[in-house]
Image (cartoon, rainbow, N blue to C red; front, side):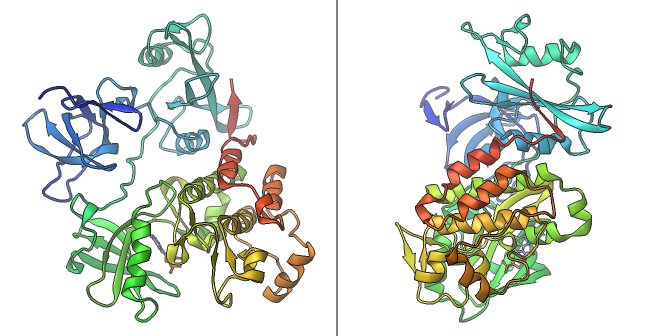
Amino acid sequence: MMFGEDENIDGAVKISGLMMVALYDYNARSHHELSLKKGVRLQFLDEHDGVWVKVRLTANGKEGYVPKAYIAPISAPDSQDWFFGEIPRRYAEQLLLDPVNQKGAFLVRLANQATHKYSLSLKDFSVLRGTFIIKHYRIREDDQGNVFMADSQLFSSIHELVEAYSYMSYGLTCTLAQPCKKPAPALPVISWETTDNWEVDRNKIKLHKLLGEGYFGQVWYGLYDDEHEVAVKTLKQDTMTRDAFMKEATVMKTLSHKNIISLYAVCTLQEPIYIITEFMKEGALLSVLKDDEKRETLDVNHLVYISSQIACGMAYLEMKSLVHRDLAARNVLVSDGLLCKIADFGMARNIEGEYTVQTISKFPVKWTAPEVLLYNKFTIKSDVWSFGILLYEIFTYGAIPYPGMTNAQVAQTIPTGYRMPKPTISFCPDPIYEMMHTAWEAEPFKRPTFEHLDNALAHLEITGHTSEYH
Ligand code: AMP
């Protein structure tokens, strides 16, 4: 059948037989998969799950699976190098500010706002400030479906608009030069084979470098199938039973979010148990913040960007009724382009309402909400408290919270109403300190939701490298 079976997945109509194009190179990782070269054409055949689709290569008729995020319908804006879909404005800024992008680099993103459908983000050089800046422009649509940035210049499609502004600036400070470099999206799995069968043969894993050691065991940098970079946690014997571990891992495996570490696979048939996750090049956020060289490159916009990614990942956990229970800068991992992901779900539990524990002795007191210290009650609202402390860590470049105070002093003074003053180590914008304060409300229900924090951080306006809408 050439056309049929219309399915509405993620809002996009997927039609069997639809012509697609590869957006990135992809090396097949199992014999069920096909390798792709950016730009090759293929036919969509079937959707396997949220990650994989079955396709046929137009050139040689070969059929196999490829990652859904690596292809797009030829006619859709997604197939264009400059179209970045629904990405937050701050992420667009981060991508464009990367030195690989020159003056005139641009991207178009879905704005999904009442006032406009798309936004154009453009990198320019400000002679006045002696630095690159990012400008954002609203692209509006009229009743006839024409798109425009200036009322006098209407275009029948977003492609036409981009082409026109590549030749003429029509009031922009410069013409559109080249599309912003688009990083290939990380996959939440290592290969098609491990998607459903995630107990893998441990001989496929080579441990190369010890990265760190935690309470549950060691963390190694390793390669899967001699090729794919992974992080491997080796679980210390007797810290957890296999059943308890598998229960935990099964929850983790259901999570799929750009700001949450993906669990790729496990090896549980022998000791030590291996937990295989994606590898994050820059390591723990806490060490990135404390590194003198790296912190030089982190201004207040970067700090807000880091915070907003964590809030976004936590909003996803909140939506899934999961509680992290150990949110802190040491448990957030960083990769290229300041991509941040929440890690260490060793203590997370799928809960309904509240979850209580017997002992608080091993909890990091300075990150822990008072109701946890007093009544051992964990909820998503105690994670919000910890997020407030994490904001403090971010805006002090990794300082230990409550400087000069012991855990016992903190546990004593918090119930009397004491809260940390506004950090002075970096420029901490007032709205950020207000967020910390609301996160530290004594009454858990008065603390904001992560959904609210995510929204507030995504829309926080701070001057600097960026520029408000024109
Ligand atoms: P943990 O036992 O989870 O606290 O991990 C100990 C250290 O290993 C962390 O502080 C990181 O530096 C490093 N690490 C853990 N997981 C990863 C990962 N997925 N990618 C890169 N480094 C990691």
